[in-house]
Amino acid sequence: MSSASYVSLSRQSGLLREMQSVANNIANSSTTGFRREGLIFSEYVNALEPGEPSLSMASADVRHIDTAQGPLSKTGGSFDFAIEGAGFFMLETVEGQQLTRAGSFTPSADGELVAPDGARLLDAGGAPIFVPPNARSMSLAADGTLSADGNPLTQIGLYLPADVNDISRREGVRFAVEGDLLPAEDAVILQGFVENSNVDPVLEIARMIEVQRAYEMGQQFLDKEDQRIRSVMQTLGR
Image 1 (cartoon, helix red, strand yellow):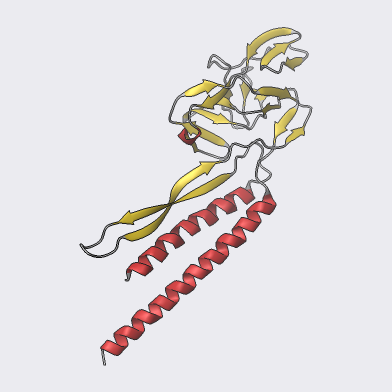
Image 2 (cartoon, helix red, strand yellow; image 1 turned 180 degrees about the horizontal axis):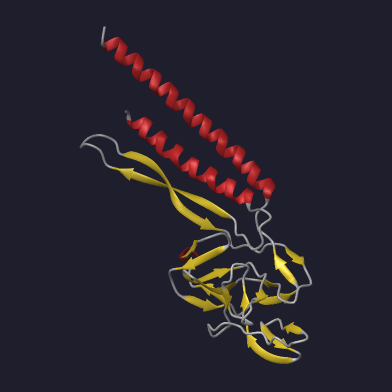
């Protein structure tokens, strides 16, 4: 296979991964708390034999999480929370602590606030949040202080990764953090709201068309290169 074919194949592989990322974004355009994901292309230069030019290959292995604010929807639920600003809720899952922007919670049978799958919501000190079973009303201050019948219970924790590139997507709308975490001091929490996906379906569809056209052009080049090599081999074999 020629060097041109290797270069084109590396680009095709990256475009395929980007198409998968775009398709996942579109599929989750209505998922509460979903963060749009993009792919970063880079160049890999490899030295060849002495006296020959170097070989430049495309690489698209780095995934970028878009942390832009998504639109808010009013639900009126006492345990529906939305973050306005930068920050994440912290959940205690079976895989360890994970971040999320999906703020729909309910009290468990033990009185702890949990996500739909049972992952526990943590407060600013990293402890589970307990809701009294006999509480008649729940209120939430902008700083995350949760109160039952006017009595403060705890403060919901909001966290930020020291470097946004340290977060990696896990299941659905959750993220694992490999680096340090910082308190999100400038964010506020709204009660009775949830944050929608920050995916713009129109932009994603436009990007899908662009990627598809680029992939088709690359495939046409590979077909022509294959025909050229076959033609040369047939000519030399006569």
